[in-house]
Image (cartoon, rainbow, N blue to C red; front, side, top):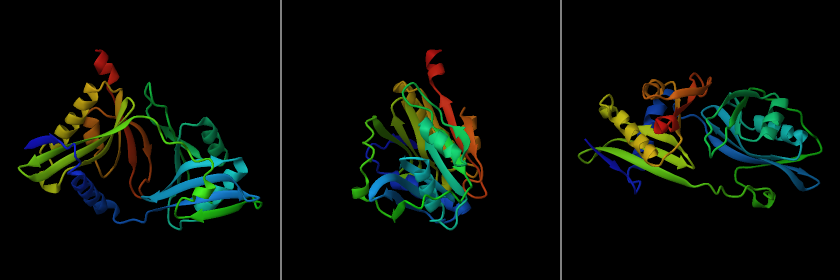
Length: 269
């Protein structure tokens, strides 16, 4: 078995293909999608909410709102846009958004890991599908972003982000791969996939070690990842990763987990 760094992302599609094939055994081809909602008052944009449906939950992204009534109205429209989902969820590092969502019935589900250069994000969730509506607002829905309604569009993230790929090859055959994202002083394991014929041969462990070695070389503070109960929870725990929080029934019928492995302490030893 040969292990290489795939600097040209030649095997990225193979990683995605085999990971999706594994996931589809458990979750099948469930509905997904995204949309944009804009709140207008007297033809002026006072709120915007981008959302996406994946694996039975609606994620709230890029939230902007003038007041709580505006946010509540946007959430009500989003909650009735999809006809088959479990709940709404959102990650934020803004205390103002956290407080607003809690006032509207959201619960705190957990906290992501922070580093010296990255903040902690609060994970919030809600099973509520009815929010109070401000009748003075006009809500516009679109499947695509509407530039004319984006006066408060966020500036591009200026943080440094890079991607790393390691691949296992059996001669010329793809035998496994890992994709890691490095941002600031943290690494996130985005994808890890091993074809069925190559499982239980230590390939996943070797690929993880290669990613971790890169993290050590760069002096990163930690490594984080997410996994589901039908994926690799036990595998990550055996490698020293600790569960930060659990997302119940996400996707439907399963739990998912946010995990972290700190590297800084080991570097200082």
